[in-house]
Structures are given as C-alpha cells and as structure tokens.
Amino acid sequence: MKPLVIVPTYNERENLPVVVAGLLRIPGLRILIVDDASPDGSGAVADALAQAAGGRLSVLHRSGPRGFGVSYVEGLLWALRTEATAICQMDADLSHDPAAVPRLLTRGADADLVIGSRYAPGGRIENWPKRRLLLSAFANAYVRAITRLDVADCTSGFRCWRREALERLPLDRIVSNGYAFLVEMLWEAVATGSRVVEVPITFVERRRGASKLSSRVLFESALVPWRLAARPRR
Image (cartoon, rainbow, N blue to C red; front, top):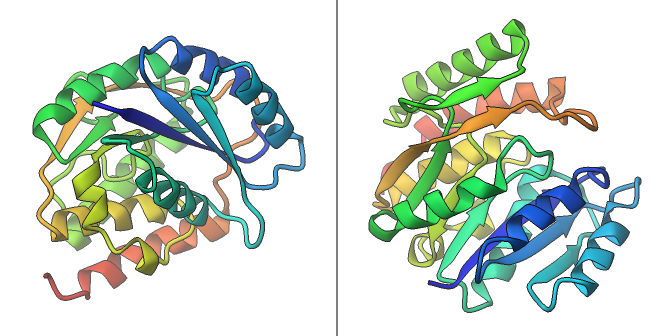
C-alpha cells in the first residue's frame, strides 16, 4: 500500500502544524496540503512544514476561484498522477483525528471507499451545540431520503479511497463546490459500483479558527441531492 492523505486548507495556520505532526507519525504516509490562497498565511506554513518533512509532504498552491470542492478535485487529480494506491481526505481543523487514518486504510483492504462515520455504531460527536447536531442529523436524513444512498454519514469529509475507485469517477464533471461536494462524490462512487463501508470515528468540534459553513453552502447542500436524484443511474 502507498497511502496519501489530502488536507485542504483555508485559514488554518494554527491547526496545520498539529495535523501534520500527527500524520507524519504514520509510517509510509505521504501528505498533500492544498492551500486555497489563505489570507492568514497557511500556505507559507505548509511550505515550511514541507521543508522539514523529508519529502513526505507536498504543497499545492491554488489560484483562481476558491472553494472546498474545486480544491479537492485539484488535489485528487494531483494524487492520481502519483503512485498512491490509497488516497484519503481529511479536514485541517483537528475535527478528524490523524491517529484514525490507519483504521480507515486497514478497512480499505476490502472496500473501494471507507468513510470515517459519526453516525455508524460507535461513532460520536464532541462539543457541538444542539443546533449543529440537529442540522447535521437532518442533513443526512434529507440526503438519504432524496438520493436513496444507504450510508449513515453521507456528509463526512473523512474518507479513504482505493485508487481504482477514484479513477472511475468523472472528476472533471463534479460541479458542487461546498460541502455538497462530499455528497456528489459519494453518489458517483455508488453509481460506478464502488463498495462503501463506514468506520466509526469521534468527531471533535474545532478549537481554533472559524467554521466555513455559510448560508450559500447550506443552499447548495439543499439543492444538490435533488440534482443527483434526477441523474440517470449508470
């Protein structure tokens, strides 16, 4: 196995050194930081970390339109140009524990996509206010009802892909740019026959920095499941 983890950043300079330190403790794991022209200098922090990482950390500096989805698409295409056989996704805000990455990689031995799940048996969420808990639970129920996806945590951003599963996806046609990107990628994975499994994780609310959740992101997230449901199954 040749694992690589993609970590998109936008104003995460305080969290990034902690995340990278945790990931570098995992033997053989390579890291790609995709910085979305962060005004706080996260890109420069990533460059400094790369210089000290002995070739295990690369940095992709994006320009052009910003967004969660476009950052990930560029990162995934970059990863597919390497020899990586397992490609993971995780947030930079410490809500995803780097120490959980090996569990996702191990489970990926017999799956195409492994989701670090807050809602699978044994999964937990820490330090979220009740309003955020209700919003997340509703969002997942909403996505499942419209798309018929049989996944407990459709909106989790902690994932590990088998390379061959990613190669089957139409990454050049992914149009969602907020967190709806995660739902669209999952829908495409199922549509192309990928075997999806969930591994319980403990999700922890960020301690530093600001959430990227906005009314625009919520609006897109409400519309995308209907657009996906209207697509013909391949």
